[in-house]
Amino acid sequence: MDEFNTRKPMNLRRRGIYLLPNLFTTGALFAGFYAIVQAMNGRFEYAAVAIFIAMVLDGLDGRVARMTHTQSEFGAEYDSLSDMVSFGVAPSLVMYEWALKGMGKWGWFAAFIYCVATALRLARFNTNIDVVDKNYFQGLPSPAAAALVAGFVWVMLDYGYSGESLRWYAAALTVFAGLSMVSNLPFYSFKTINMRKSVPFLVIFLAALFFVLISSDPPRVLFGLFLCYALSGFVMWFVRRRSKPIA
Image (cartoon, rainbow, N blue to C red; front, side):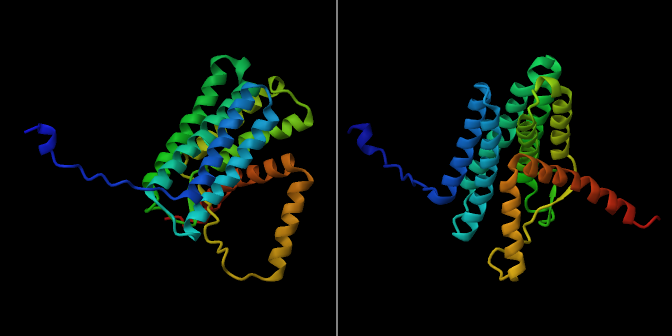
């Protein structure tokens, strides 16, 4: 008898993936890839804007998954890989091409610190997701760090500065963002905000003013917001340290 006829058929189960949330993740990944391409072509403003678009899409995929009950392990892993490209590789390469390239080894060293810090930050977040306080992030979130780096590039281009003239400031900011990600500083997560809960009319009005403020001067407003957020962890740590009773 033919040995192939005696072999039992293998029962392979194909596991599908949810389309809607992973479309947002794919969009964020594409925006990060687009930022890398534009940085290599010298279009740094387009690259910076693409990173902000990736941040918006990254913020939507998780909320969409929770609202539509389409969370999955595949989606979580895919989102983490997308974050590494959009908020790790892309910002470090954009900053390197814009300002750090002429610094030699110090330039790529600063860019690598940011890149590896993003990888470590994402790995720690994935392993500690069930044990940390939901109200606070441990370390600066990678999208906020990417927005800080991209916002600096965007606002300085808007002011007419070249990356070469600001390379040391750019290197310091890049290292600061990287070290903030791997720190143990608390950063407010905004996860306690319930989008389904009714709110006073004043809240909607203030939200409208917030969008008007951003649209009036996107580079300066966005960079200022994320710079304040990046500093908030240090302020919160200092306040908590001062408030602890002396033994």
